[in-house]
Length: 294
Image (cartoon, rainbow, N blue to C red):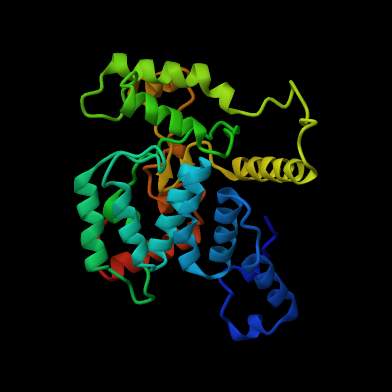
């Protein structure tokens, strides 16, 4: 979307930065960013969140409507960690029902857990909940924008799956409690067979001669944005919004030697190899000093 310098992260609202012409221009660009689609709208909100408007992370849930479910979930989870308490209410709604719009599966216990946190948020001295993932755990998100390839950002794949599962009853959601190996494999087989029809085939055709210039420009911008987002998306999904795999898919990945325990999304971030060792030691020292247990 736009290059945000490291020293601009979280700087919005700081007097010395707000008065700087360079930063002022950056803030204006983000504030006036294009809202031509849900996809662009959501990404501009993430930009605003990076600059310090934590509420914008929470409203980046509009990315659900463009098919980027894990990115939307991670954004609202980050908002909650930063102390945006209303984001806990949004997270609770995710689990109130199964939804192909958000990639969620109904879990009333988790819904109640988030609602209780909303009523009595465990904010630290800085007004944040940095260890929220250790309080509530991580939940897998059904998102087919993965392996470096994005589906068309119109969420049509999810709409069609919802129709097949909920209306026509031709498929069964693999996350349902009464799903079994047979129904899960039928679902996976259908998605693998048909997902190509929901992806742009750049090798087969160019631009339609019926398109207006604006349509062509939007298509190019959207395609570039999608490729940038996918290039930044970890292969296992985001720390607090990992990709959902059926048990059978996980078995196949394991047997193929493609599971890497270092990439396990359920491992708390501070215990991963990529986490700065000096910061990890400071956290552990603080926990020991204040008798904080894992």
